[in-house]
Length: 97
Image 1 (spheres, rainbow, N blue to C red):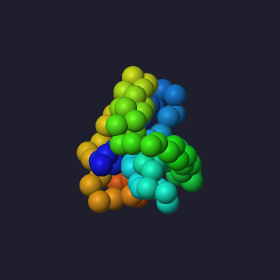
Image 2 (image 1 turned 90 degrees about the vertical axis):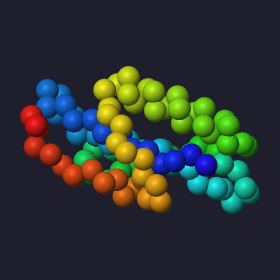
Image 3 (image 1 turned 60 degrees about the vertical axis):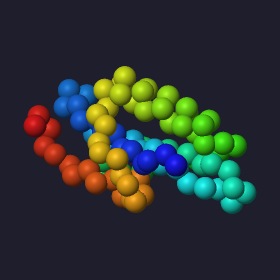
């Protein structure tokens, strides 16, 4: 099972205060669902679900998305064992810290 992970982006130059999360959930028909959550801090988060027939496909897609977030300047937060990505433990910080 894929461990939930969260990313954040704080950039004072572009006023970017963004979060991004990936988690896995089993689907109704025993398929594997990748839950992708993203948004701006202080605003409602958006989410999308992608379904896969096996865990290996889900792992590959999650790894690709994680690498893309890191390439775009996001930093990875600790894995969120046992937590829903919608409950991202990200405290707002003052810009410039």
